[in-house]
Length: 189
Length: 189
DNA sequence: TCCAATCTGTAACGACCACTACACAAGCGC
DNA sequence: GCGCTTGTGTAGTGGTCGTTACAGATTGGA
Image 1 (cartoon, each protein chain N blue to C red):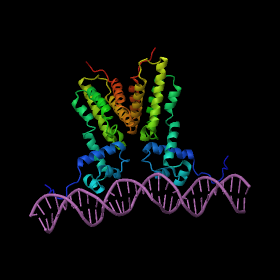
Image 2 (cartoon, protein in one colour):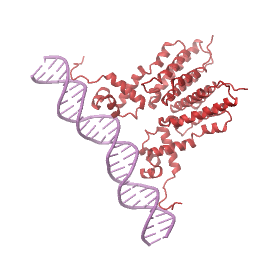
Image 3 (tube, chains in turn red, yellow, cyan, orange):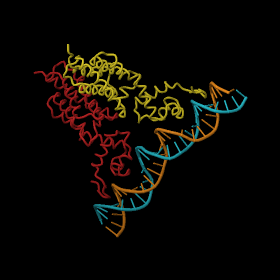
Image 4 (cartoon, chains in turn purple, brown, cyan, green):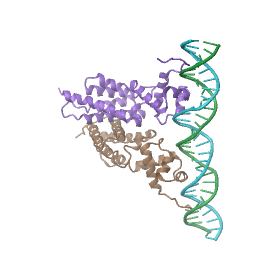
């Protein structure tokens, strides 16, 4: 048990992390300077470094926070929906909403940062596993190519995020989602 | 008629512009420093600035060159194919090839640079016009939503470029293209 | 052959980058 | 009160950014 003595932190760590997350989300890792972060958060460099470590560590923590908040809807859909079809439908329709929510950066942080390709591959893999499970249980036709379908879903979500960044409307993204879903194989009755 | 006097340029302007284009294509505008460009081209800063102007102008010219070479296949397809369906089919299948050609940066320069959203919108508009034309001539059903279809094509191409950047294979992109094309409305007989 | 124009290499410019040394302020245990 | 610990604000660090001044090299025209 540490002694817990010394001067108290003069800012809310979680508030600041949220502001930092939005900055990285909007402008990307490289284009967001530490000076930008100190300006938007009001926290001076030494305090920022003491609380989070260097810029890279701060970015990592911001991404983790993003995944647990703004970007958690995909993991929730995969976890809560019984079939891959329902999970993907929910992911795409909720993405249309999340990627165009006012007073937030548009699109997806993970899909916008070139350095996060590992997380993107994890997400595609999770969708692929869900599809594979449905094929195994007979909910999807035996010939269904799980990888192919998962990559197509990945392409759709990336396209939606990119469009959102360029200012596409929620309705436009919803249409993209609906059109993409129309290719889903018919379930086994 | 200028006098054409003075020392000759010690490098091939077009060769250097191609190397610069590939650098911006691979790493983006911000992440590519002038020092990087002088290192990869072997051209010293004063010569680079004399030949192309500042970094922004160099990027602009690199993008123009890209559109006339590596990225010209979309304009060619729209120009040469008689129907929107054929043009889009060609765009998507050629994109799968172009975005994964060895010894080249992966994906599309225009789709990867955040600052080029104007060019992206132009491309979507061109596809939309082609679709609208087919609806007007009766090649596509009267109820076809040209904007909706064009945005879906835009999403697909963006998704393919993003996947290519992350190392997707040509076969995977081809599958995405084929799947996306399956949503195309049946032509009016 | 000498001039004027253009290009090249060196070497720097001020501005910004991520990051931190240091002195001081603020808190807790005693 | 005192001492120890921890956060804060100022003011830098060395390094890299885009850009350019300047002197020398190289060309064609007169």
